[in-house]
Image 1 (tube, rainbow, N blue to C red):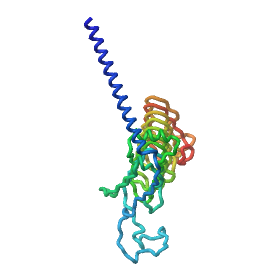
Image 2: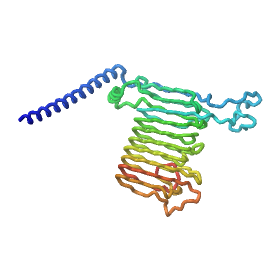
Image 3: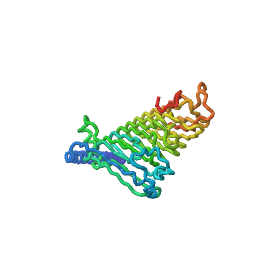
Length: 352
């Protein structure tokens, strides 16, 4: 009898503890909702403000000796200048590190005109976000940071979105990067739609992190110089990257999470080039498109821990590969999901 009473007492204590925890969670959530609602009333609906920002890059051009005789006449086409006659014409712009962090909106990252500054155009909700630009001199040169930072709480932004679900998102920005500046580029894009086109840029390193949403990363033309290394992380959503042959990276690390992801290796690969590609895929469908004129090394592997695989990481017997063809060393690991390997008969930068 005593043991039975003791057991009931323990069960009662556990039940009271669970009920108290539930009440506490509900109470905290209720307070957060009320607070967020009051904040939304104070801030009002997200209001689009025009973004027109230019980050001057004139300072990253190495100084040259001032010589009035070496100044070209007005109207001269700079592309025709000889570096021996005009030393400034042959100068290489100094490298920079560029960090771009954007979230909750529609974003484009595109090449800009040669000789231009880094520019930002479009609009953003200035009552919920602020557009920040910072510059400082680092050990290896100028470091530039561009951020769209939330100024309202996460819950408040959710309520604002729910109350304006039929409105276009006010965060709609286009960032343009000059192609003639060697750039160590770091991108952090989250929640929304993002289109990143990097063809023609001069990249010394590339690190891209795409968190949630619909993402497109492409190289529609070759980079100015082969890229030593690139890292790409696509965590959740629908992600596609194409034209990797135009990136010409010696090492590629691709990390995909939950969703539908496509990785296409088209583009203008350099003859006799050798690239190591590591792909870790967690959950969902992964499609790899590899041109038939690219040699897949014999040490390539496609390991599926739980899921299915279609196609093989092998050369197409019906399409002989040239002796000087680029070589891909592919190491693909999938923990949960499906992998499809497709061979394209042309080395285009399209996904199909």
